[in-house]
Length: 121
Length: 109
Image (tube, rainbow over the protein chains, first blue to last red):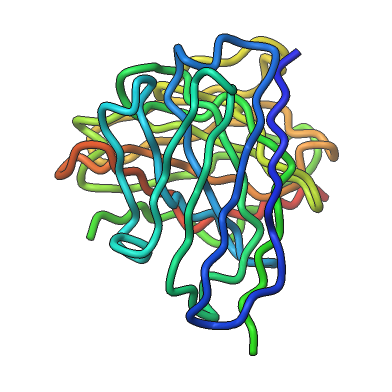
């Protein structure tokens, strides 16, 4: 059974940093691209960032480009999102999602339950 | 920036066919994928690559795409199908970037 477990969410002040992690199990992690998707409570889904299977390529939403960095450690079956210069509008539930493809960004076939990030003074 | 447009809400009676549309200029070149999200739960993939259904998804869910519009079809909608539905596609103008539609709330009553 595929499992994706996010961690690292917290209350943080504007301008500070936070690092999210996602631990994967139940599939060959290194064979698939991975993503972060966020959702403001009560609002829609927003794709945040993605990374291909061997970290050859990454992509970011315009709203986070230059502030967030996605990375992965295939040896530890883990995905990370380093979030710097956080803004109030980054407040959301952050989901880790597994891609159906390895070398490209395709669709998300498995999701975690999310970790909540709150940016507030 | 690339956008996908969905109607905010769709209502159907039980047993009727629900159609949820998603429009975007890049859809002739990129697949549309559909997610169902029920209150308090993570999204679930219900259709991928325009019309393919993952294992475990009921046959009443289907999808189609033509030109700049993709459509999620729920034939014989049931009360358990209520929730929010999102289309998703890759940005056709930039590699390695994705976008969701704004979401459609499906009411079955």
